[in-house]
Length: 77
Image (cartoon, rainbow, N blue to C red; front, side):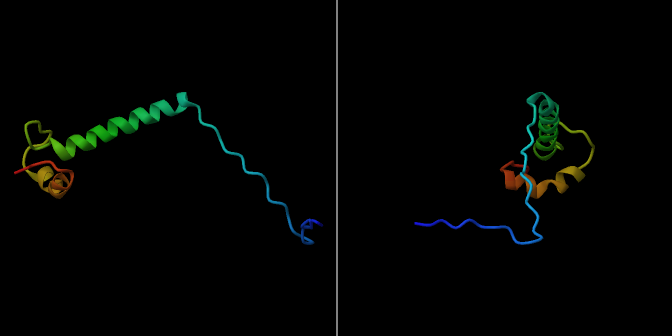
């Protein structure tokens, strides 16, 4: 049984090896904390604002987030 070996075409360049970068968890922790706090702020704005706890007066925030509240299952009226 004979095996054939592929020979590169004339003028072809070799594809360099790809290195996968490593990320230290200590470098990732501040970004994870920031993303978590931002996510909590978004959940607050959609779920609780213009209700018992409100940052702004009026109903503008409630109306802007109205459909999102229903989509997430929050009762708002």
